[in-house]
Each structure stands twice: as C-alpha cells, then as structure tokens.
Length: 347
Ligand code: KG4
Ligand code: ZN
Image 1: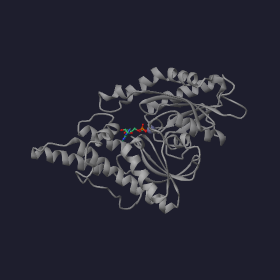
Image 2 (image 1 turned 60 degrees about the horizontal axis):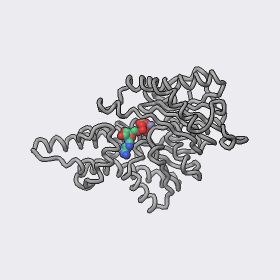
Image 3 (image 1 turned 180 degrees about the vertical axis):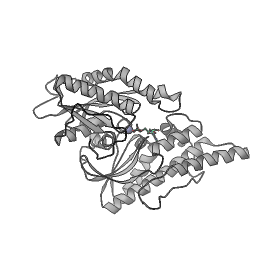
Image 4 (image 1 turned 90 degrees about the vertical axis):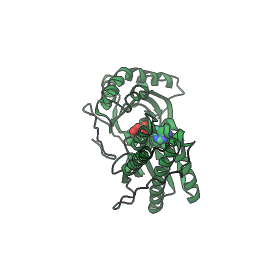
C-alpha cells in the first residue's frame, strides 16, 4: 500500500453490500473519504421479469462477490491487511441476498482477524450524505425513499434515530416501479418515469395527495397507484389515447408534493435548519429540484448525495460502519442476515 493512503490514526473500512440486486464493495477512509466504490448491478438480469427475482439475485451475488471485493481493494490501492474493520449490510433486505454478503464478510474477518461490523441498510443510505457534505453533522431530518422504504427520520446523532413517519403501504420507489409497469415503461420504473416526465405536463391530471388521518408524517402511496390505474382503465373504456408522459409527470408531481410537504413540515416543527434526502428515489431530478427550491425559500440547508450514492452502494455502508467502529461496536461470527431489521435496532 502507498503510505500516503493510510497514516497514523487513519481508519480504513472495507464495506460490503448485497441486500437486493447490487453486489457492491468499497473502501472508505475515516468515514468520509471514498477510496473505491465498485457496484455490479444486476438490473439487466431482472428487467425481463419486471422486477427483482430473489433466487436469481442470490446466485448472482455468489458469482460476483469475491471479484467485487478484490476490485474495491485494488481500486483503492490497499490490501486487506490494511483494513481496520469489515462492515457489511445485514438487514433489511432479501434474506438470500443478504446472506451472501454476510457470509463473505464473516469468512474474510475470520481468516484475517479483522473486526466485523454489521450495518443497517437504511443507516447506510442516510450516511451517504456524509460523503460529499463534509460539514454535515447530526442533528438533522432525513427523508429516506427507496424501493423498499419510505421513512422520515430524525437523525439525532451518528447511529441514533427516531422514525417520525413511514409508509402505511407501498414504498415511494415501489409506487414508481408499479406505475411505470402500468404505463408500459418497464423496470426499473423510477429512472424511466424521471426521464419521460420531462416531456410531460405535471398539471395534466390531478392525482390524489394522500393524507394519513392519525399521523401527520406517515405516507400512503397505494391510493395514488390505484388512481393512476383507474385513470388508465377509464381512458381505455372511453377509447381515449393515454399520454404516457403526462401520466408519468402528473404521478411524479403527486408523489413529490406529498414528500416535500411532510418533510418540510417536520423540519419546521422540530426546529431544525438542516434537511437531507437518501435512497434510490432521492436521485429523482424533479424531487431534488423541488426540495432545493422549497428549502431555499425557508432558509433550510438542503443535503443530497450524488445519484451513485443514492441507489444501493457499499460506500454508504463503509461510512455508517466507520461511526459504528468509532463507538466500539463489533459483531461476532454469529452475525446473521435479518431481513426485517428495524432502524436503530442492533442484533
Ligand atoms: O435505494 P435503492 O437502490 O434500493 C432499495 O434499497 O430499495 O432504491 C431503488 C428504488 C427503485 O424503486 C427505483 O425505481 C427507485 O429507487 N429510483 C428512482 C430513481 N432512481 C431509482 N425513483 C425515482 N426517480 C429516479 N431517478
Ligand atoms: Zn437501498
């Protein structure tokens, strides 16, 4: 290893992520500097099925995991022996997929004696904000919107969270994927709706903005999805041609309106002046623009990761793993995949 990469008290984390359909590894220095970020995306494999097939995902992870880890070390110009810890996503996610990363991390840790740290996937998504925003420190509010999760979280400190809002049904990314399938855009729906929406009119169709009666920060997207399906059916019955771009743009606007309203109400109520977004849907260009504008109006500092750190990656796991490492958190070789691991829960 080049001496300038690791000096004195530097902490290097090898991070591994395999919770869904990305096999990823990364080397992160001192929690904020990404030395390598290798992502093998399986999206093309799953596209023909219209969504992630868990069994295929697990098999592909097995095929790719060692290669991705070796690439991450070599891209960073380091060797395994230079690592201070191995951080791995152990939940939530697809159990078979998670098990591949967890088993690889345990085997490497056991063979090398390097400490093992299990990391929560959503904690990783939130921590992605620390990579490019060196000045960002808790407390702040973070909206996590991905394919499996929609959470509004108070980040009280590193690794310390209070969930103040969550989806009652579909996750935001799930709604994007389902609506994209219904209007014939295919999988994965989020990036496709993002692109097609640029040619559509977001005011063309007024889709509902759902409110959850007993909880001001919870989300519900299944009603919106049904409204889009009903609209498509009624067009078909009337023999009217559907303008795909208008439907995509109007649906996207409805999702964004709800996300912006809930999030910024919470920022105000909790009295914070910092707000961040995370997760795959956070790479949506219109969502980013809307938050930039609304945060600007209210004098709130708005943070967001680059798109490559929004969708699944291991760098974010390395960042979260670093803060766990600094707190002295270590896992034993009994670490297991926990498909429904709750945020803030440590098993
Ligand atoms: O965070 P992520 O990579 O995986 C999970 O942890 O779920 O998020 C994937 C989700 C998918 O539902 C995908 O359609 C959505 O993020 N997504 C987007 C965009 N890029 C990815 N949704 C809206 N706009 C995008 N540009
Ligand atoms: Zn994710």
